[in-house]
Image (cartoon, rainbow, N blue to C red; front, side):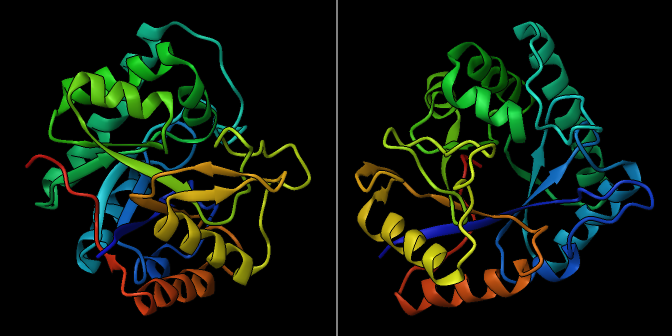
Length: 255
């Protein structure tokens, strides 16, 4: 029987600026990737989101990104591997503090935005992130784009990994995501997105924009929680997976 995790990026509000419906979206998902203050979020939002995730019984992960609040972490920053290593440690450790005071364990780490995309293709960036995660806690699960350099780096350093796929993003023939700058990067039709997910989970492949199929492994599915219909989509996707007899639970590490 197939098993898959449903994850969502949360805690991306900042001060009085509210993003998403975090409390509601926690109901259908199994893992929350909580922003750590660099691309979004702040200390108050982090504290609130960790508490909410614990109350809902949702697995908690850190969502570190580039120091880029203005660009929401979606702008690539050229920097040294040591800088990436240090700011990933900094962000994971910040969220760990809130997990500790709430008496809950952090389960995973998923990089955000441009950092995630760079780590998918650049082994140097990927290795810096993987080493940072391992050095903070080797029991943490590293989420990365399915089959990417980040997944390879995580396995190499000795981490458990979660091969991640995206419900609402289109794919290139090589299995990478279509850049957001392209007009066909996003899937807006609910049924099309659900069909893509079921194909990825059941058949270990994804249909690319050119009509070809790329091999893929789906351990965890990303749902973007800031869309207008995010909650409705999350509920429909969960129901569709359950109807197929697919188990839904967090990716397990080495604890």
